[in-house]
Length: 241
Image (tube, rainbow, N blue to C red; front, side, top):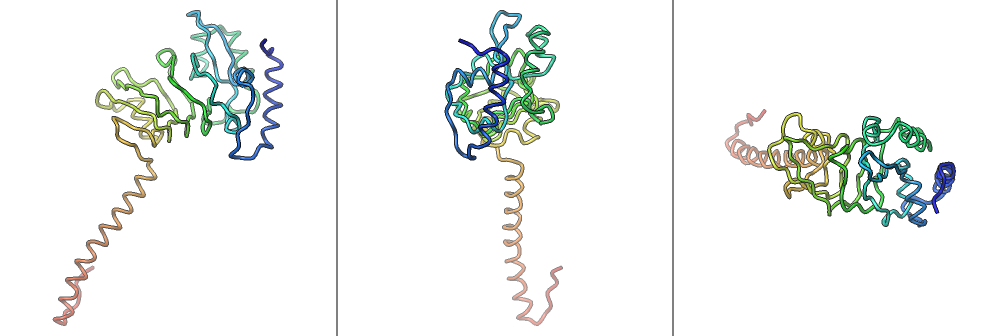
């Protein structure tokens, strides 16, 4: 049995209020069938396949156990163009109306599973609509591997992969206008691996640079000190600036 549209919306509001009393760091369990119906809306695309569109996401999901939710046939792009491409306008309006818990449109990410314990074994449909405005920070994606062909480009925009352990294999040199290069420069790949090399955050890189500079300055200073001792022993003044 499936919940009707009205009850799905009401249960989203009701559960959101209850979750406010759940302490941070704790996760509560609910039937997977219920969570699946609340998080996703479904519609059949022009290709005849049934797609799942995340319509109820945000930081509150960290308080729920999502480890057994299926992410097969999930659409990772909620833009109007992509919904138009796959679904009828009626379906699009229904999906948009479902996303009425709060005004998440003002947020940076349309789809936010950051910090949750979701298990995503593969990202399907990237060739159809790609990924856009998704926050996956802290999700364990260490079992996922992307082959990045920058000539055909990586179909992802404004996707936060930080601290996911996701693996990227870059097949050719990054182009200046590459989407993947933009993700890298925007610090959205920190905590991932590119060609088996761990990627540090820009902040961590800056800390490492400062620590290295301090170490080098101390190293140089020891030689100035050694030379100063010679000058002192001969009564001369240090010429160090």
